[in-house]
Length: 181
Image (cartoon, rainbow, N blue to C red; front, side):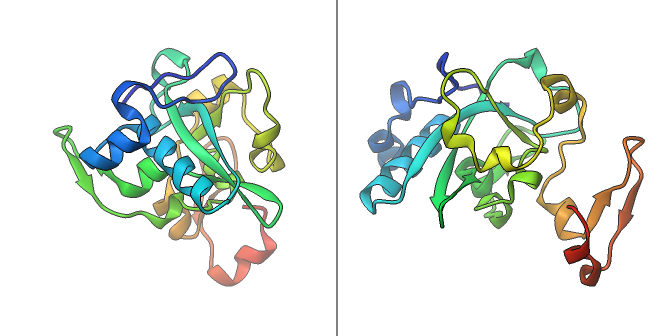
């Protein structure tokens, strides 16, 4: 997992070569660079956007070190703050550590109750811009670390977790409006 610095207030700041102009010029960056560039672009078109720092979970394994290591954004859409992760939307690293471009729309305006399976904001300092994410129950840091790390493919397959014992079932799309997922 790529590490990035998160301030004591829980807000990620683009650092060093991760400032938006450098990321755009080099066409590469890590989470702080992607999130900083997203904020700059949103600011240019007057869309309220905040940088968020916290924990990112890419697998079912426990979060290494349990310290904030990821950055993403929240955008104000129709009066509600909604999470966006430009980094994860751009692609993934493969088994060899090489980045593979592959746009994943799941990470754009993701429902907070799904986003929180892989992203846990650091709630240090002022967390008012996280109200969108706070529309759902946030897990404790231990629960997040031990959780499944469910990604877009899970939800796209219409799967839900039925109980803490990890019972997973496929749900017909016609029933999803009636379920709390």
